[in-house]
Image 1 (tube, helix red, strand yellow):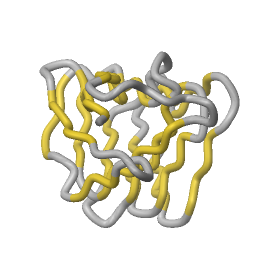
Image 2: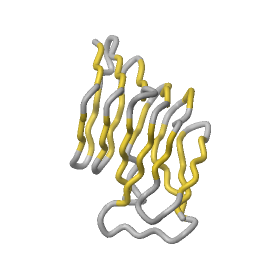
Image 3: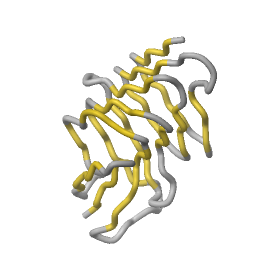
Image 4: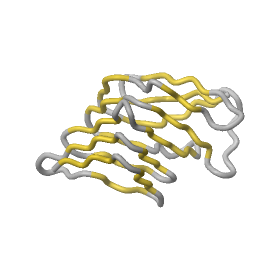
Length: 131
């Protein structure tokens, strides 16, 4: 099964699983994937954050917004938003995405309002330093 998000998909609440563990499931985001709270676990054969898409992640500093048990293809825009009441000290490192492996990188990274961030692609996930 193929799932193409070309509009806006908003995930809120604690945790959600997207995809299946049996058979083929392909996720492609060319619209806006908004993880407003909790964790979105991506299962399936492929997961692609397309070059024309936006991934909007709200972080509270402790929950990883995206967990991918497999390869993740990264592209497009990453927009980072701080959860209400979360005011990290400068230099705070936050893990936004877990993955087994990845290809690509975000072409644009939009920091939280009034802050700057730098991203670090690790072998197992994406960390950002918030200043």
